[in-house]
Length: 248
Ligand SMILES: *C/C=C(C)/C=C/C=C(C)/C=C/C1=C(C)CCCC1(C)C
Image (cartoon, rainbow, N blue to C red; front, top):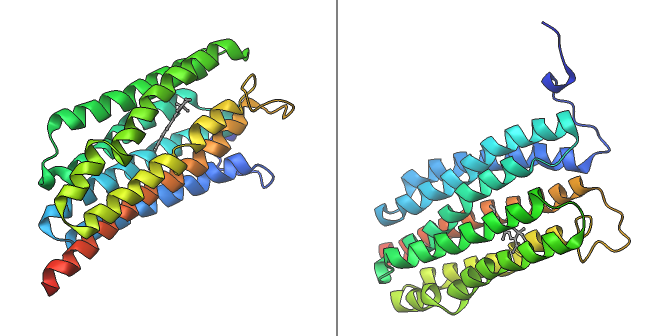
């Protein structure tokens, strides 16, 4: 059998995109093991949230494994794999919001609204990215449509049902944790549309002359921040709310 270049893990030292694909993969894998192991240490009511954290980083790790290979073999951005990853993991982040506020009365209708908004955000974003010919009009329209879904999740986390339920929970660990997750949605998630606008033809691309694969630098860094960060916040809630019940 012939050995093709794609069989060899070769990370060019001067390629930051390849580097972030590789380290992103390792970080997601390590985080997954951590969340899964720590799941055994936390109070029963937080175990499912911890498992969801492990699933989010675990699903991402598998996608990073394939995305890294795809990028190394083709030099192109793995758009389809990227969006399959997000379509699985972002709704799971919505599940985290639901699970954390469930004791305070979160309904499955809230969960479905969040999932629908995030899937809308991703399907429209995918159309804007995968079928864009580099002329801005097409991708701007889909980017704007996508932002509607993003705005809905943002609103729900900061002011809407999730924020109100967190307050109602009366658990300071949950109030603080939901606020931290809301910050992730505001700042961490904003990296994605900024990257999107830096693509060829995008509003922020003027004069950058960037290759479209540069988008992966934004997405890889944002994914590490958001997926591992989300999980750590959930872990923090589980641990601090537990410490309270022990001393109470
Ligand atoms: C783990 C993956 C996460 C948290 C992915 C989040 C993705 C977004 C918030 C993407 C948002 C987009 C817009 C708001 C407009 C342009 C198109 C997208 C899909 C990049």
